[in-house]
Image (cartoon, rainbow, N blue to C red; front, side, top):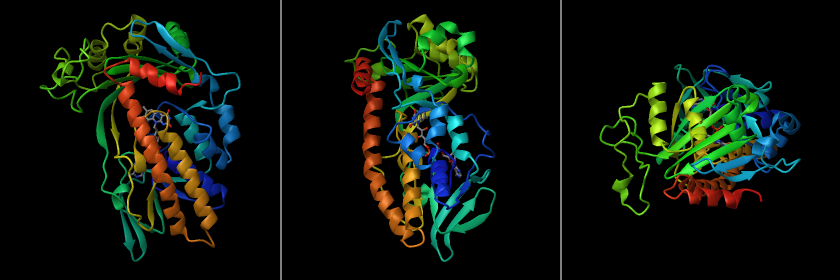
Length: 396
Ligand SMILES: Cc1cc2nc3c(=O)[nH]c(=O)nc-3n(C[C@H](O)[C@H](O)[C@H](O)COP(=O)(O)OP(=O)(O)OC[C@H]3O[C@@H](n4cnc5c(N)ncnc54)[C@H](O)[C@@H]3O)c2cc1C
């Protein structure tokens, strides 16, 4: 198993539950080597089902935040347009911090930290050969690639590579929001708050312990921060009927150093200029900024089955972050583990992998297309599209 994210850890945990310990080969040097990331909402029939298969549902329910399902949408002038609150006892999409989920899944699993895979070569006489960043090599009967967006295992089965969607996120965060920024805490509420404008949006999500993650999202060329000839691909006062050149905003800096917190902050404040002051406070009070251009794999992404190697999660079907990727990754991890456990001893493991792939491909393809269409509407020239999308998916 390569990769100790939601897909790999769920796979290993379900295998473990069925009496088949799996070694997880993880590139990070340790569980806390980098910040674990924001909150995840786990769906009843996806992430939560996977945790049930791992025997961890009760522990998840104790840790998760059903109140985090609350969702509020504001206009750019600060007017509240929608305010959805979860019904008492609702457990359809409770939120959990990624770090809590990781620790829950880790339990007593055998994770070998600091073991970055560089290359996988199937079909050698000894089995599937794996080369590691430290120069070591090992062979395995089956290699499951759960090594995320920039998977190294993927090249053993497919030549597909992720491409840029045209939408970039810049992430920042606030700590102790209830005591340090009570006004913002009230604005965000118990769950998430989002504001959508022309080709851009600002989303704030409450994590546990008063921590808030903020995502500025906008359409821009991939090199928006470095290319002096091509500034942010946005126009604050865009004419919706104008041609593509009208999307250029010569007022914003290029040559931006993404490590320069104050420079990124003022660039973003310029981009969201004119939005309500309390909303802009999310950027004014944000700590460091992390650049996350959104990439996706072609959808559907399928490959000719290669004995001894398969993929799960983002490695198989990287899609826009619209609340599905981790859920699918976990469900697939649990399903593959159950199929392999059922086949072990008497069945054909390769046949089980083949059947798993045929089940995964069309389902992931449908989600990839839906989330891509969703991204087009969320970060769109017409902000009413974002509101309409929420009206379609939020429970009334
Ligand atoms: C801003 C944002 C918000 C999101 N919100 C949600 C949400 O609310 N709900 C949801 O369902 N999804 C969400 N997603 C998507 C979700 O994060 C991913 O789909 C999910 O993490 C995929 O899990 P994974 O295990 O396949 O990959 P990853 O989480 O990427 O894990 C891959 C693991 O493999 C390791 N690795 C990488 N390369 C190697 C290598 N060469 N060798 C060994 N190990 C390696 C990595 O260190 C990592 O631990 C969001 C994504 C983003 C960017």
